[in-house]
Figure 1 (tube, rainbow, N blue to C red):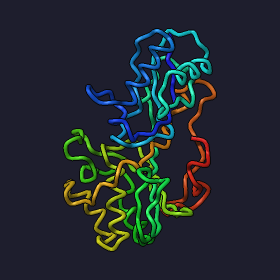
Figure 2 (figure 1 turned 60 degrees about the horizontal axis):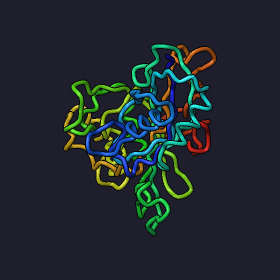
Figure 3 (figure 1 turned 90 degrees about the vertical axis):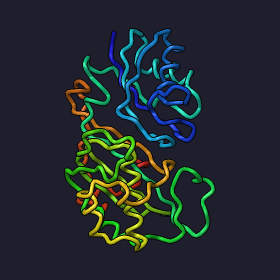
Figure 4 (figure 1 turned 30 degrees about the vertical axis):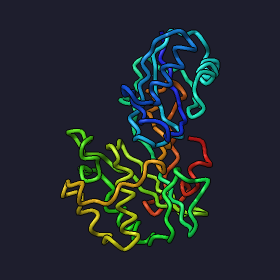
Length: 279
């Protein structure tokens, strides 16, 4: 038996999120079905975490314990041959025994896409939030800075899905202008259900002048979801990457050591379209 790490890309539009749910289509179940078809095994595929209903992944990470002797690249090809068009395995690698996609993770990075233009987007319909007019990015960035660090983020979590422990560390929020909109890139040690979407929705209310930038940090003390802003649509959310310590991945398998931007203004070497560099 060996443990394999899977790096997955998927379009979440037709899924009820990552986790297997009776009566609904899930990414986890599709990957487990592909394993059964490719290897003849019934295996449990464990993801790095749940993704929201309708949310996407550029690099979701998952693991499975398998008795298959197929080399990593051949196992990847076999799984992809049995997966539907809206899911693909980008990479398979054998990792040390004891690796766990969720519990071994050090941090996660999410992307939220916003299209800003007077005319509604067609090719990005359902894949990004559309704004007709640009928000005040200086105000958005001031508000974003108040959320950095270790806090209780209950005010930004789905009230009906929040776990008992809602304290998380938010390492960075990059607000990056793009050719036709804005990328929000958030990095932290973990995220609560709908937390990224709630933060983006709240920051965009600041950008529209409906909320004072300094008021956003005060929401953390309220722990009240109704005091925060509207939850941004799931279609604009992408799990961008998951990082692990080198020891968890085995010899020569380090985490991405490239520094992020110098602060949440999105300055520095990291201030490029995150889809243009490998996850």
